[in-house]
Image (cartoon, rainbow, N blue to C red; front, top):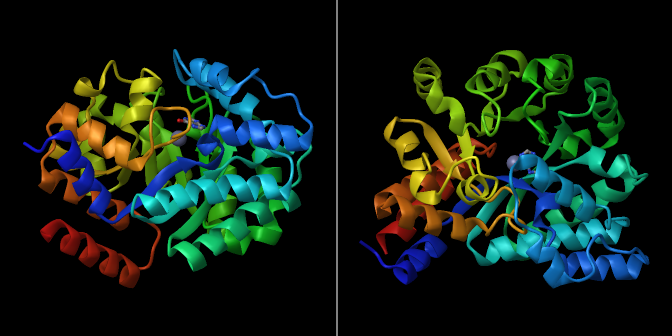
Length: 339
Ligand code: HPA
Ligand code: ZN
């Protein structure tokens, strides 16, 4: 058994990809307060400490309320650049080599911040990070499933100027009561533009939403998906079709999807033959960044070095990188693991 420091050093050294992280969920309170001040906005909390103390969530909904409130400080292209840059720099320092980053256009459009403000801010940060930090990325535009599908379709069409810079579409926000089938037409249109498709499913929602994301949306990956274990036939299908699941251990504990890290199904999912990856979801709110997620899960679940290597390998296998890039990253993981 490795102790915590050895584990952390090992995970830090492994090249990794992050495939499930919400840009807006990387907004640390310090940056939010700096941005609020320069925009002349009153922030949703009186100070940083009060904000952090409020990050105590009962469920997904109670988190989303705070997440959307904090997001409201973002107004200018520079704000979005600074937000994306801070996350990418932090990730590069954790030896994250590739990121597939979610963003929520409706969280900004609904406040009167247009695509022409947030998209360039994010895209320039991604380009700069690739040039200066060597971290590659893809952008995934998420639709808010608790908003009308007609809105999502409008957003998809509004995004046409940026479509060649947006790799795919996703589905997030409040899950229960909003089955994937609602977004069938939206995802079909996105597919017709050659965009990748992913969807949050089986976080708070039932296993049927996972099947629905595959069948109704053509999802190539499932975000979370932990509740698939409630349906053995679904697990068998996910294994057979090698559908990647982007699991977020610390998020699941903080949002009470699971009672504790010791009871997290990550290891059981790996043992069932599922293609599982580890991710941070909303690291500024939910207890940690990517290395923290690997380390906390490894300690609580007794993951071996080999398990950690499989998780790092899966992160590249499940990515939307081309095969040649995947092969290079997989080689780098094996090299780092052998040191
Ligand atoms: N689940 C659903 N929607 C979200 C999340 C999440 O974990 N984070 C940001 N939007
Ligand atoms: Zn998420």
